[in-house]
Each structure stands twice: as C-alpha cells, then as structure tokens.
Image (cartoon, rainbow, N blue to C red; front, side, top):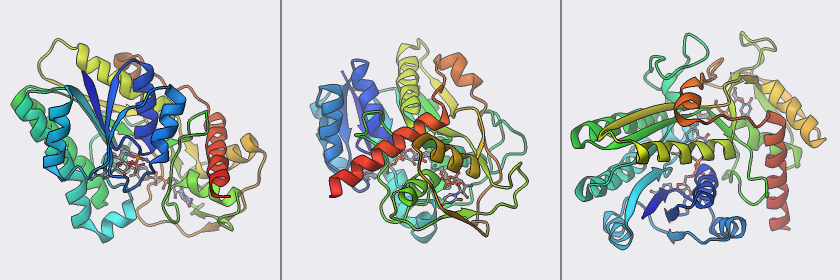
Length: 339
Ligand code: NAD
Ligand code: WQD
C-alpha cells in the first residue's frame, strides 16, 4: 500500500515525504519538476535512507497517471502539485485554472474509478481574505479571493467536498498559513525561481547579498509597529500535520469524512518582527527600506489552531527564530552548490 504525493519534490511536499517515510509509509511521488529540482530526490534519500518511487511527468497527462495507479496500490493521496505565484496567476489565469484544477480532477477520476479514499488537499489561508475577527477559525466566513490563485484553492475545496459527498470518500482540506524555514539538515527548503515574492526568501537573499535591500511593503497598517501581521509556521511542523491528517482519515470508521483544518503556529508576527528575529537568529544584517503598500495585502491573519490540536493531536511548537536559523542553513547550502 502506498501514498501518492504529487508535487513531492516541492517545498512542502519534500518535507512531507520525509515525514511519511519516517512514519513507515511507502511513497510514490509525481512531480514534473516545473518548480523543483531533481537533486531534492537524492537529498530525501540521504535524509531518510529510503528512495521513494519517482515519476517525472505533468499530472495533466491522465494516461501517465493511470499507469502509476496501475503500478502501485495507492491508498491515499496528498496533493501538493499546483502553481502558486499569486501575482503570476493574475497575468496567466487560464494557465492557473488549468494546472491547479485539471491536475486535481485527473487524480479524482482515478480515485473515483478505483474506489480509493483518503485525499489531502493543500489549501490556503487566502480563502479567508481579510477576516473580521482574529484568530481565524475554520468557521470564519470565506471571502471570494482576490487572486486567481486563491480562487483555484476555493474551487479545489468545493470540488473535493462534492466528491466526498457523492462517492462517500474521505478528504481533508488543510489551510496553511505562511510556511517558512527548511529541513534541519539544510538539504531541503524553498526554491524560489527569480525574484521571490514571499517575505522569508526575500529576507534571505538580501542577507546573502543577492538583493540589495528588502522592500517592506508599508508601515502604515493598523498594527503595533505599522507592518502587517501573519502566522509563520515552520515547514517541518506543517509536514508532520499531514501525517496526522492522513492517519486520521485512514483510521476513521466513517465512510464519508470531510475534514477542514487551519495549520498555523497560532501566533501573529509582524514583518519587522520577522526581520529582527532573522537578524538575531543568524547574526546577520538585513538592510531594508519602507515602501508603499503592496496591492492586495491584508493587515492581519493568524490561525486558531485548537481544532487541529484537538483532532490531529498536533501542534506547531518551533519558535520563529529556530525556523529562521534552518532557513539560513538552507540558503548557505544553496550558495555552496552554486560555487
Ligand atoms: P512548490 O512549488 O514548491 O511545490 C509544488 C510542486 O508541484 C513543485 O515541485 C512542482 O514542480 C510540482 N507541480 C506543479 N504543477 C505540476 C503538474 N502539473 N504536474 C506535476 N507536478 C507539478 O510549492 P509549495 O510551496 O510546496 O506548495 C505546495 C502546495 O501548498 C501548493 O498547492 C500551494 O498552492 C499550497 N500552499 C503553499 C503555501 C506557501 O506559502 N508555500 C501556502 C498555502 C498553500
Ligand atoms: C508576508 C508579509 C508582505 C515580501 C502569500 C500568498 C498567500 C499564501 C501565503 C499560498 C506581507 C510582506 C513580503 C517582501 C514585504 N500562499 N513582504 N516585502 O502575503 O501573507 O501571502 O503567501 O497560498 O496566498 O498571497 O505572504 O510572504 O508574500 O508576505 O514587506 O519582499 O511580508 O507585505 O505583509 P502573504 P508573503
């Protein structure tokens, strides 16, 4: 029996593959390497001592996916594969709808035809938009996302809920807040292509000298230091939550399960707090300048994680500084690979 991990060589996927292997699961990865590198597979093997099955193809190619399901006894799927750049999704909406939804539907067709249950979906806190009340619970009303990327996540959730109800299957929608950090070995981490959009990769590239200065997008928000607040969750903690969510689905005696969990640290940090924590953790300087607000940014978002704590017996406990230390170790590993 095996678990299909799509996008398993990507940032969150690779960390989750390690946790699955460490928990005794057989892992089958499908990843087209559109936003990842082959050396990650070797590094997973170095960390775990096991080589997962790996198929490098685009999940939109249904006939190749069928062959994977023929070759392995798949008992569940964690579906990370998606395009995730918010800005790009506005410029290439059709590509985003196609990649994020066709891939999902192709896997669900295989699940439907073969009677497989246990599907975990990478959703996002973006489905809440700017919530009225903090912290954000799973019952906080959803808002129509501003970005095409966000819409693909909300549509994905709806498709999966319909799938679970109609065919009596088990699904889990995991709404990640802001994943950061890297594997403690320094051998897995985020690989931003081009200029990073996300805060921590930009901070790292500034600290290492690739970028001259960090642009802080606004310090006139209604927060203590004027910069926006997010819930930064350590990626290894996030990866472990997937194993718990999968176990919960597999162990459930119910035929139909629709789980929804917020996955965050349950604590908000401002942009300036992250920059300071990075400087302290790694004893480096991050030059920055204050710039106008970035379009579409919200003021504050952090998670109420009591449901995940109660039902998944999981909690993110890694302090911000520690996860920022692992991020820096990863950046140095990347530097050493390029020289
Ligand atoms: P990532 O880009 O590092 O990983 C995604 C992987 O999927 C990549 O390795 C890519 O090559 C692969 N992929 C993409 N399209 C594919 C296709 N058609 N066929 C096969 N492989 C394909 O992204 P990540 O940060 O690890 O995110 C994983 C998931 O979590 C995504 O669904 C993303 O939307 C979601 N998510 C990410 C964040 C975040 O901040 N990183 C936050 C919330 C949700
Ligand atoms: C965090 C904070 C920026 C970069 C995005 C997606 C969302 C979800 C998580 C996938 C904000 C500030 C950033 C920089 C800065 N992803 N910042 N200078 O905006 O919470 O959400 O990632 O589902 O969908 O939109 O994360 O890391 O981009 O920004 O000042 O160079 O850092 O303004 O306040 P965000 P982020």
